[in-house]
Length: 447
Image 1 (cartoon, rainbow, N blue to C red):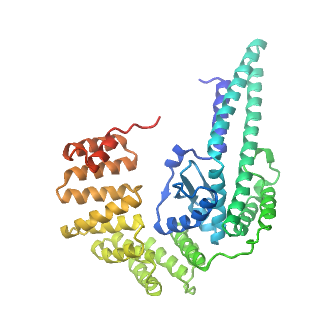
Image 2: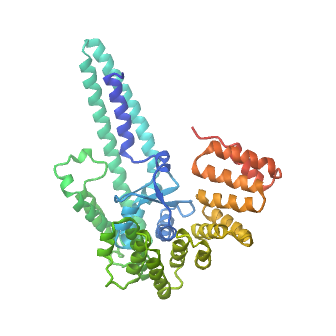
Image 3: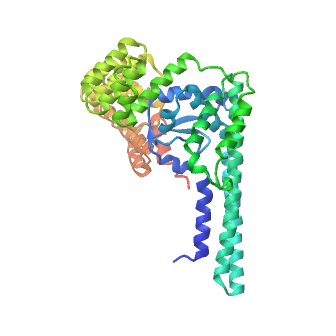
């Protein structure tokens, strides 16, 4: 059984880590949502912000977390995580752009590195304080004195850590407004977001100790943002009509895929003839096992906006997941032609070609799967489909390599190495495929 002092030290270390949200390792275990439409739009939102922050040449990926809470965060220097709840709640592009600008502020200031260093420093100081308290308890012959001293030290350290976190959040807010100003965008959406959050937190924050909050208290934050935002000549500048239209479609998609049917129907009734409403109703029909109605509604979407790749993608998805794999090929081919750099769509198209069972489609399937994985390698399913395609062509070396890559992308390093060793035995040494297999064989898991 651990002593009270040991339990206090462990609790302190956990508290320090909890202040700053998920670590990179914890972020890898989050339930993520993949959606080409949302990822492309959010990437378009964040690209000018990153450039304004001096991060334009950095490879920053958007990851969507399957969580209905309003939240966004960074857990490493390469990703910005956005909850589905944030997409649903952000009524305008500018509101979501403000959130992204705030997270970019953390990235630009290297806050993650500073946070981890501060955590390490405070953990060391707390450990020393716990040891000192233990010595005092031994000297006095009273263990309770030692435990009380250790607990007090932990509270002081935790408060110091929380104050440090609040300073970083305020700094990220200031940076976000500056980035928005540099890109000629309004910070009004950011202000609206914090006003909305303040209303939600009103009762929770009443009587709360401001020194025990990881973020500045709502009104402090709103006042700071509003003072800065209203100085900008772009404060009243509206979002572009194109972004407004794309945002409305993305938001309708996420509402239809994540919210109860009653809410979807209430928000997008049959009387609403807009494209987002048609989109939401088509998705709701598909989600609640009515593929025929979903197809009819999607065809209407395509009739109204034939150049939208995501409507064609959705039609292909309905057919593919309903078992009409061959029928899914043409709409997915159209989607790929309209969005050639969307790796997710190419992988779905390649999967349909493999699933058709027609050997004549294998070369086209392999070409699209490889290109799709090249544009978006974080798709184990794409590698699995590639393994099937190569196996049917009798190319067992490349089939084993694709299986190794699938296992590696899924995090099963042991299985990945087994497939990679088999691939090496079949592939010509020194070729690009052999080298990819060898990279997996020699890979060492970070400690």
